[in-house]
Length: 222
Image 1 (cartoon, helix red, strand yellow):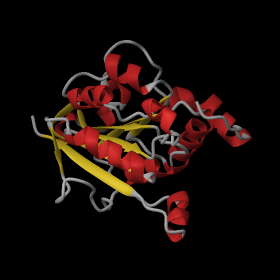
Image 2 (cartoon, rainbow, N blue to C red; image 1 turned 30 degrees about the horizontal axis):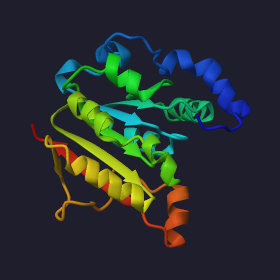
Image 3 (spheres, rainbow, N blue to C red; image 1 turned 180 degrees about the vertical axis):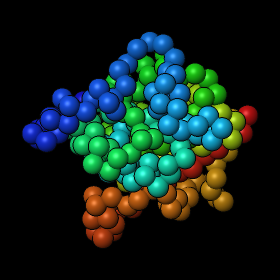
Image 4 (tube, helix red, strand yellow; image 1 turned 90 degrees about the vertical axis):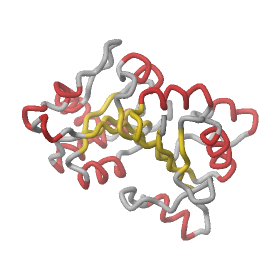
């Protein structure tokens, strides 16, 4: 877990808004209709289920959810300041299609998300663990990818982004080796940033300094 100071506004959001927008972890399958109060979103609309893993401070998450009101977003993060910040943002904007969980992604996927449940998975700028001896700690490894793919429906997508080139290369190698995924890139590597993913302030600063950003987009085909 990253360290960092929780501001008074973030702490207030954690204390006052968690009961409204934060889903508690429990080792039983998530009922999406109950979690998103489907009575406010008629079942015939068939909302798509999108999971985001590691939303940081939540700016991108809120922007995407606001632009795609027909989809339901479940966003995971363990960093308290980030959870508090996004809770406040959800409340300020009035988003009804976004719920948060403050728990380990692997356990959530294993126990709360059923097979063939998700229509999309977003993983943006995961910790690169840039020292070589720490690469084994990186999130995108073959066993974790198999878990992700199992939870995706056929036709569902997996969208990742990183600003570390060697991590991007590792991601491509791992994901291209997963036979049930098809790389959406024309050259089997990276794609142009999809329009729905906004450029963050941090990312924009890096781009101005000449730093690269790599987007990867895959679809489950079997």
